[in-house]
View 1 (cartoon, rainbow, N blue to C red):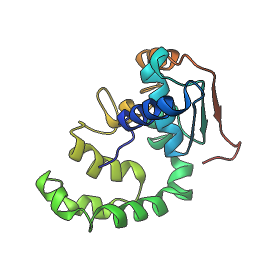
View 2: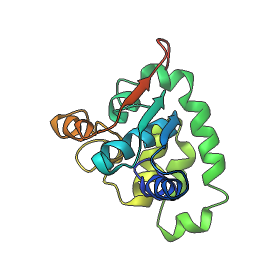
View 3: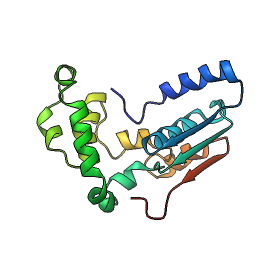
Length: 170
């Protein structure tokens, strides 16, 4: 089951592309793809194998955007995306969720992304919660929780990186 903190797929793709195209790899991600692209680039540091990274509308600190500060996104797009994610994950993966002892009821009631992540992603992947030390959002974000540890992780980005958001991006 995919989650935003898993960058091993990106590392494998970069390695495969480098075998075919050499050093000419630029990683571009939009929204969740931007979050994963930035996180991979920060985690891998000088060994990222990229010439550059571009993240469009992907957070550097998901805890800040999806947590308490995310009132606007909770109104504008989170209910629709939470609904879609529930449709995509619950019925087709019911057996897998049961094997991992994920209670489907709170997931079905989730109306925001942080509620979906707290009730499905965290228990499924063993995160203690969405926020705080060792939390899912710390793991999936290039700037971690936005604290000094997160800023140090962000400083490991060793290639030119463009992070772009619209002024009205929720």
